[in-house]
Every structure is written in structure tokens, then in C-alpha cells.
Length: 178
Image (cartoon, rainbow, N blue to C red):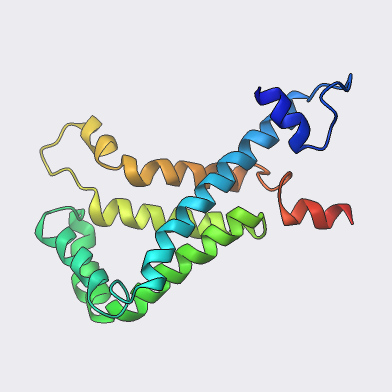
């Protein structure tokens, strides 16, 4: 079934004697991952942008304070969150909301994928260190377990930085063919 879908998605006749090469299959898999992550980021951005709760009415500050009071921030991030992020909460909230939108659109459309992935990787690492601290006496595996919500996306962004995830199913690849 996947082969049938990949053949039609690439514009090939299923009965064509030319099978997809491993490189073409990998390119399609990377594009599916890129588009999926892009959709997630559009979903993350839409509630922040369409509702003013996150940006204008304390939603962002709520989360930063939650990270601080519940011990989710790594110790080296606490002073940055208290002394820089909270005093500049509203502009940073807008940066987060519209940054997620820009990352999502770039990945979904397949344009500026590497710059968007670099920004996404930095954003995910910032979230790991701001919210995923398991505590000073936690075993090593809990550091990884606590960060799964952000580290998986960080690995996706790293993959998009290293690979050519925009080689198929992207505006970039369409424009290159013109």
C-alpha cells in the first residue's frame, strides 16, 4: 500500500517498471517527517496566535512561573528565566508564537527548511533546559525521559539540518524544476 501511495505521490504509474530507489524512499520519508513536524508547529502556533491568552493575558508568564516553581528549569536557566524572560515576557511570547508559525510554515511548504530547523533546534533546546529538569538526584536515564516531549523534536530538527528533507514535496523542489 505504501509503495502504491509513494508511486502516485511521485507522479509515477504504479505499473511502471521503474521502482523507487532507496534514496527516493528516504527522501519521501524525510518529507513526511518534515511535513508532520510542520503541522505540529502550526497547531502549536495557532492557539497562541488566534487567542490572546498566551501573548497578551499572561499565558506565557504562567508557563515560565510554572517551570520555576515546580523545579522544571535547569539550575543554570533559573536566573535567565527570572531576570530576562519574565521582565520581557510579552515580546518573547510573541516571538514564540510567531516563531512557531514561521517554523511550521517553512517545514510544511519546504522553504527555508534549514534556517527554520536551526531556529527550531535552538527553541527545543531552550525548552529542554527551561522545563524538563528531573531534579539533582535523578538517574541519568530520567534526564532523557523527562525531555522526550522536546528532545524528539530537537532530533527531527537536527535531521532536517543535516539531510535534504526539502528535496521532494516542497516549493523548493518545485521551483528548482522550473
